[in-house]
Amino acid sequence: MDFRQNQPIYLQIAEYVCEQILLKKWKLGDRIISIRDIAVKMEVNPNTVQRAYDFLQQQSIITNKRGVGYFTEEDAMERILAFRKEQFMEHELPVLLRNMYLLKIDTKEIKNQYDQFVKDNFSK
Image 1: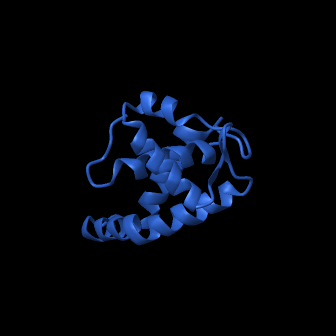
Image 2: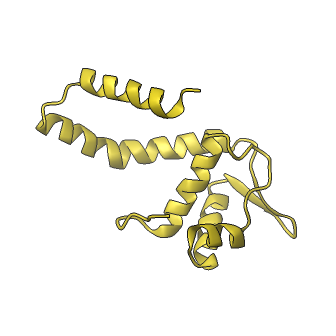
């Protein structure tokens, strides 16, 4: 996985886990990939994954069933959406809006691009 320089790796791993849940690749209440397996998959130290999983537990997105593994919480979807929306509104949207203003891009252009993006990437 290619990691961004401006954000800690453990948070990027947490985002990956959240995306898997939002995309319904990992079902609510189901067991998720182990720390060791995700560390191998992402080519990171297991301690980094442990930090990501600890963060997700603090957010009540996953839970650890001792001796069994990690599971998604039944209400993880709502928690993820709330957290990710808050982060987007605080950090990413202001940058987008500033660039739209500076580049004289109106909302209609953005809407068209958004619709095409959804069609190309998420339509079944």
